Picture: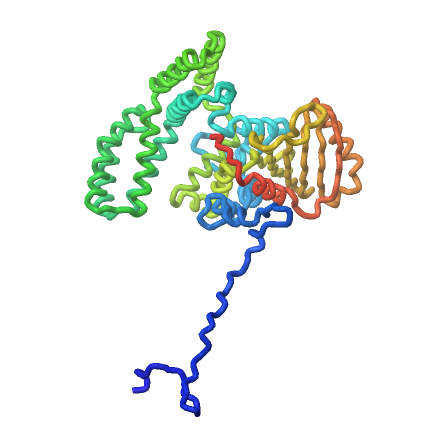
Length: 474
């Protein structure tokens, strides 16, 4: 049985056993990563830290991968807006309430030149939930006081404010969570959940009554299901989101909002010794903010786009109206990525039809970095504000612009299609005139030919530069 014989050292002709050299082999060395080797002078490269940040299990790496894989709004939203503009439009701009969302979007895209500025300003002012004078005042107060107890009370107030003025959205989120739970549990429990949902109050019920009904009819059923099945799959995630949204809805009453504000104001008076004049100003800002939230801001484009995306996201409705579900998902993903904590820009976008010519505009406004080292300041003693623009005009082509604002001085670089190269002098004079009419002092105004898009590359570079800084604006 040769297969059972143990392998031994060979025997030589002289009868001696030849033994192999017992000198240990040199251990194999792992390949060196050049990004982690210190450079001469003791300075290290950023390669190792970048590799860590872009690792598969890092949050920043997941953001970069999703951002690179998602088509930009210049592709998806522009295609959707072009389809809306090319479709049949109702006469005038007044449409019935039950008009198709695509038709409402087409009507909202028809604008005058002044409407373009109004829509972009609306996006900037309403880009975050806490963007009014009251929240700017609280931001300055928190930075000036540097008091953790004050920050805790501000956080409680913001949580109550969110629940109070987002009750409709939170209620819809709860219903979406219930549908997700229903789709991920066995049919016998899904039928019981459907029967329990029929006992929920109608839409015109108060948020408190709706929350109490969910706790009475839904939560005991889900509790029994989890106890019996020990399900840790998709249903558990949906139930967790349901509980979180229910907690937000419970703290969303006006009574709770007033109580949180009075607690915050009381601490400012006693803990921070806030003067009575400042306390009165704070009360006035709170009343002004509450009154302004009573009436929903009017903006036809934002309302039409939100209605279209919401309706297209429902199962089957988007396809029945000729919309591409993949394009709708890409648009929603792009908007969510714009509000990521890793995005160092405020992103404004607007498709419009002006004078029978379609225009798609995107503006990237660089956010302030409070932790950045002091940068060279201009003559006005303020940090420059940079913004980047891209606009695609029907029958003219693709344009890019970068603007640097230092006080009242504006430095502008415009890259236009090669076909307009012969009109550079005329365009430069027109741009200088526009800056002067807007109350700005024209600095350097340069014009070049746009061979290939450069703004997306700049955006990516700025994201990499600010990868360790996050923005938590809500």
